[in-house]
Image 1 (cartoon, rainbow, N blue to C red):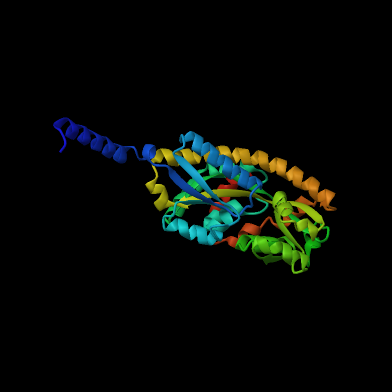
Image 2: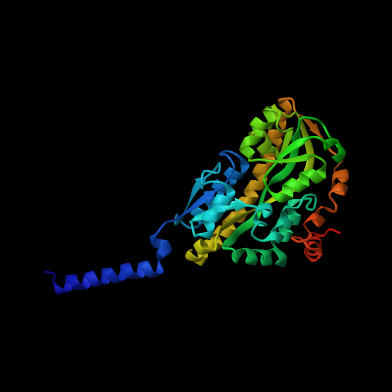
Length: 332
C-alpha cells in the first residue's frame, strides 16, 4: 500500500512526464533523419552532407541526428522520391531536371547556357517565381528544404578534342536519363546516350560511348579519364541542387527543427562551394598527370547554338516564365 505522501509524489511524477510528452517532444526524443544521395563517400557532396549533419546536431543540442545513405543505398532517385511522398523520414538531393516530372516549370533551374555562375541561380532561388514553384511542388507531396547548394559546374570528357559544336558530331556522350540532358547533348552537336552513372565507365572502356559529362571531381571519381583523354571545358550547366523531403514528414517536425534544417543546410552549401573549388583543382591536376589534355572550347559558339534551346520546351517554359527568369538573373 502507498502512503498519502507517496501517492502525491507518484501523481506529480506522472503529471511531469505527461507534460514532457505533450510539450517537450524535442527535448525528450532524438529525431533521426535519413539523408539519401548518389555520391560516393569522400566526394565534395558527401563531405558537405556530413558537415550539414554536424551543424544540425550542434544547433539542436544533439536532438536531431542524420543517418547517411550515400551511393544510392536507399535506391534510385525516383524510388527515394516515392518514399518521400508516403511520409518516410528521409531527405534526398534532387534538381530541376528531375523535379520537372512533378512540376514542369522547375526545369528552368536546370537549363544549359542560361546561368553563368551560382550567384544568378541563388537570385532565382530567392525569387517569387521559385517560391511559387515550391508551393506547386508541395501539392505533389514534396517539400523544398533548401536549394542554395551547387552540385558543380558540368563539363565533358571525350575520346577526341573538340572546340566547337560541329566537332562533337559522332561522339556518343553519356547523360543522365533526363529529357533536358538528352536534348541538350543532341543540340550541342553530340549524340546523347542516357544511362546510370555507374554504367558509364565500363561503357566507355568497351567503346559503347565516347565520353561523359559531369562536374570534374565526379568525372575523376568515376575514372572516366582512363578511357577518354580530352577534358572539354564546355561549362554547359551550373548544376543547382535542391534537398527535398515529403510534406507529410515535414508536418510532423517541430517548426524550429524545420527552420534549423534550412539554415544549417545553407551553411553547409557554403562549405560545399569551398570543397568543390578544392576538388576541381585537385581532380584536374590528377587527370592531367594521367595524360588528359584540357581543352578550352569556343563557349560563345556553344552559347549561340543553344540560344533557342528553351523553345524546345515551350509547354514547360512558356515565354512569360523565361522572361521572368531572364529578368531575375539580369540577362537579356
